[in-house]
Image (cartoon, rainbow, N blue to C red; front, side, top):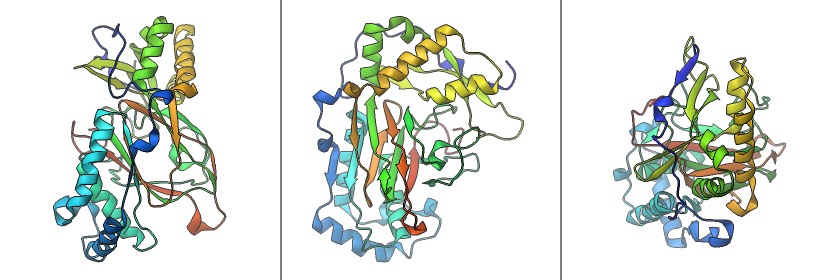
Length: 333
């Protein structure tokens, strides 16, 4: 079909037909999310405050900053723990927290950039090659061409950039300001959802291994395809690869002027129900100064609707990074 980026080459030779048991196949009853929280002690916090003075003299372009410029072995010990949590399971980690009351905002962002490089290579998050992305309510209405991250609406379970040629391997967030109310994060294991679908809804799961349409959210050059065509689930090299954003699937059909067939709509609805089942997710707040990292291909995340403060300087603001080794650093990879 014209106007579609065809990624159907990702279709697996066959659907995985057995239950997956690994560090990612958890349920709410089997993990304690507090075990994924790494707390910065007072000594490390003081070191961070000292570092902030030298960081302020670094180049203004974060791309020129490298972890080797930061003589802080304890921080990279922390980041090794983060990598173990996100790449071996359960798939998410929280660092509590950068001392934002004692260091400047830009210095905190530079620290976030440096630490993120320990997780993986940072890559562009927009077609204009933006590397660090502000997540905030812009006042725009969520719709075609407006990312949910620029609004305050509830964002159901998904992974970031699910429609792109190469999906980010990991996502990082630095919380500058939390919301007045709401804005909580939830994490859900794609492995546990896959196990549930295989056991109770194998026909729906089979459809999700087949290609489906995706709205590309206008993140492309003029004249390029407005939609993508790729499967939600793929099993390759003993790893589950997932593209998940049911809202963008439905919008993909809509912008192409297509009706969603019953088999596809049923599969999407069942997938949504499994993702939203409290048995499969845990919730964590995101407070000022905290850093949050997650595995973007094996873990789904969710953000609750939020209410902002009236004062501009107190409004919810997160800084986001994407990381992957596959492909190039450019947006399309």
